[in-house]
Image 1: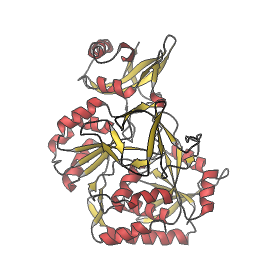
Image 2 (image 1 turned 45 degrees about the horizontal axis):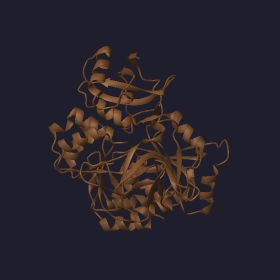
Image 3 (image 1 turned 180 degrees about the horizontal axis):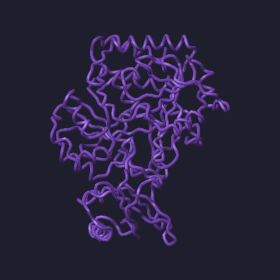
Image 4 (image 1 turned 135 degrees about the horizontal axis):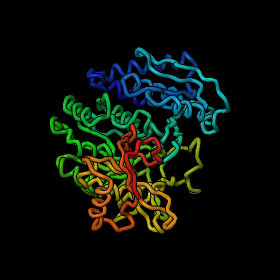
Length: 460
């Protein structure tokens, strides 16, 4: 079985807590028993090695179900239990999944059997035919456009968790169907750690959980870190147990990292690097507060070609279901991240798909956002490109205000504040004020066209 090494480690931990959910502890012995029960059910239902969904949020039962399904060689599409039905149906039709699974009253069950409208995609059918290798299909956040469906071999993906780390109490912050969420869950359980599951992803709930359960590790996004800084939600809580915060999933603005390190100088703050296509790679920052990092895995090679970071690793996905292959002819994954190498370290500049081209000059949204979010009147800013007949594109920013301000006053304040911090072509030419959300459920900034956001006012 693919999960045999996990089962052995669960047995070694015995009564040690594996998960805390709804203020109740669940031991590794309990987890081992649940995996066994669910594995027998999977076999009895004839689902071993088949393509299935697992539509859940974090819970001890969902964790046991994922381990059991992968162990039985299933190809699993994890889906957030609260994903909108239209998006859920889109994913099911794309992969041609017949069985939709979930957990009801503590038992893994078939929620629905779907009628297939076409043939199972070649990538998935080839995994099924191999038998026993299992698979994982993950969808990107789609924050810059259409979600891409990445296909991983479970045997390769699970192999990466044989490497144990120091067991810690960790909040699984990233979503259950996100590569970061899967990584946090499997890394913690394979190392004898304890997952402290939060009721929601608000700064208040995260701080409450850290205090109550003496959480030691917190993997989050830069957007969440900024929200915590702005809201000062930590002031009423004891966060002294927290040792390490790792951030990833989007570019970190220098201003946010500097403010974070000023507020929490005692924490070890680490830049993680990962994506749906790669998994999460072990990294080391050059120094505290630095945006430079190196990848700490002998099995991973990296290079920068024409400004793009490329990575070669055996744990990379085998391909997309709905997009062209991103691999070079010699097997390197084109990450889509603009990057530079500085003294052997990597610096991520931004996603290629997000770069704004103003008259041939590059503008990285995160750089501009980092400057704007230093302003007291701005709660959050999302920068994007807009077509221009003169320069090809111009810089547009959509803003949520922290204090009341007219568009005219905001435009003047932005110009005055940015003059000595950004070249003129990077200063936003179009400013939109909104009361809508600028952050997705995955705590990432939404950069695709925000047609659903209610605009208060706009100006050129």
